[in-house]
Length: 206
Image (tube, rainbow, N blue to C red; front, top):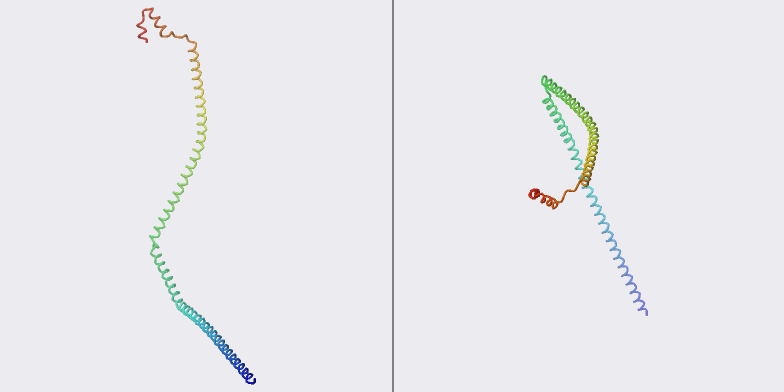
């Protein structure tokens, strides 16, 4: 019996040792996972910092280049502006007439301007006359139009009267024919002529 207790105690101790071992192994694995996770986070942070630094370096380099180029650009623009001014003045000097030439040019310009004014005045006068004529023609046209209508009306009335006269005459002719003595028929005329021995006259008339 004591041997059974001993055996049971050993078995229990053995189980406890195994459990402790498993627990230690588990804790060890957990620590390794945690450490790995921390390493990954550190690596990721380092990567972000490196990218940020690279971006900052690029921006800094660009800014430094722009700062260096600005005076050059400004100087170049100033030189171009100055050159444009010089060219413009030279061109104006070339185009500007001197002394006598300038006076002649001014005279010509005044003459041209005077002609333009005269032409405009003439055109306005012609336009005014044309407008007045058009106005008068329109007025006369209206009056003529009224006369024409009256004339047409009169002609229609006369036409009606002529037609009525023609019809009246036709009726009169018809009445006269009705009242006139009838002519003898052809056979009766032939018999009459035969009695008078004038049959040859019938042949001629027929």
